[in-house]
Length: 367
Image (tube, rainbow, N blue to C red; front, side):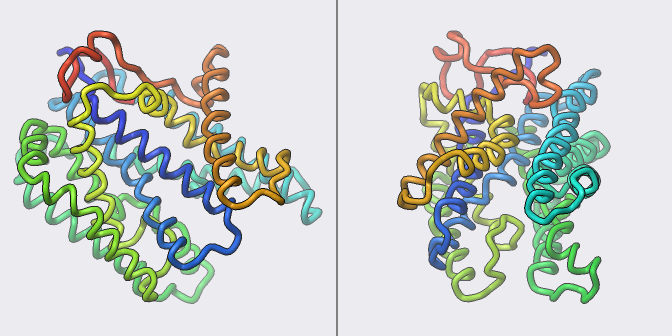
């Protein structure tokens, strides 16, 4: 079967990637943001769960019956190994920084950080561990999901997702060290907090025609839903209902889902995907992993103290993306460099450019 790539994913992946980078750039650029600005930061966190949707959507669309024989080996080489190596990379960088600031032994600090990054997924690469959980769920349960009613599965998954997040959003942390740790970080890792995106993506990819027809049929609602859910999320945030800048909140499940459908619907109407969108999509994995490092480099070597916030924002945002693309490209030119940063994604061929919006004829495997 000729594997197909979906044009709309380029825009969806690029927007998700840019939202994450923009959020981190805003955090570095404004020291004392207003409450409304913090609410805006919160809305930008929709990018991480969007990557989870994209991963399962492409998987379900490309392999409706069974996974290919080299599926696991490729994911380990191009996704899981970079998780380990980047975790070590950031552990070393943090170790030297902490050692210089507090005088701790550098090797002890690095070892401690490696444990926290790799075993506990305590760095921004944690989403890779979440995606691998959904690879396993797809592998073991896709044959059952095909037989079950999509409405029931999606409905049940939404309830599980809301109850799980709602518990950690509303209930106070258990007053122990472990309880504080779980509430502040670790509850993000289990798939229960993201399972709704998985089931929606699975059935959207499996019943692709029904999915796209549904988007067209309910386009008016889909185009207005993000604004409605954004206002609800902002209101809840500013009125003290779990005022945390995070995608792991009950209200953000609805906002994120509406944004995914909104972006996909808009991209369906684009005949030619802009080159810059394709480029960012191709390098999105490298941008995601690399951009915090380059933002730190920019903050160290760049005289930014006298630059106004908007100027800092542009420098951090554009600079980290540009440097991440360069870094990803250069490392991929080194033999086996993709073990560190992953492979550069596929672009668009001339044949795909001339095809209608929707599914192209390009042969590809999901990235």
